[in-house]
Image (cartoon, rainbow over all chains, first blue to last red; front, side, top):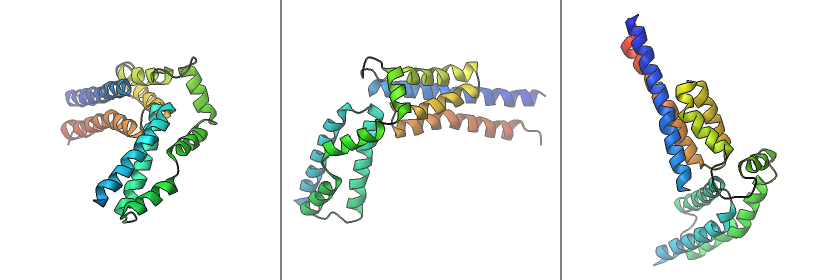
Length: 33
Length: 164
């Protein structure tokens, strides 16, 4: 059970990091244009 | 002696194209210039342009930069979705690249990932690809940054925590 929760936690954390980084990159790209 | 001259012809041509394209939205402008550059590079790599006369012929065939921009503008203008989004984004005329669509994209990707996992970023990506303010390259990079960590998470979860 603990293993499943650990896996879910990693999955959620990594799936949240990507879009946040992408938003920062896109905002920066638009500011430079 | 010929190679620098050929290069100079290309530089002058691209400079004229950039000047003429300054009225296009940044995304369309960058895409158009990238496309013309690729076309010239492809012709050079294929050996179709070996001297100054060959390059002049190629550039003549491409047409006047002003005509290319006018044609690109005609291609984009009649699309109702573009007209509507341009109006919603900038009712008083072109100024900032930040329109409603771009703000919604960044918010959905940034906050959406935390508040509405999966669905928020998914809608954000759809809005990203609907916007004309980012170049195709920036859209591809943005999509990759969004998707790759999630895939990494799936792989890690399966490898580390799946009961064997």
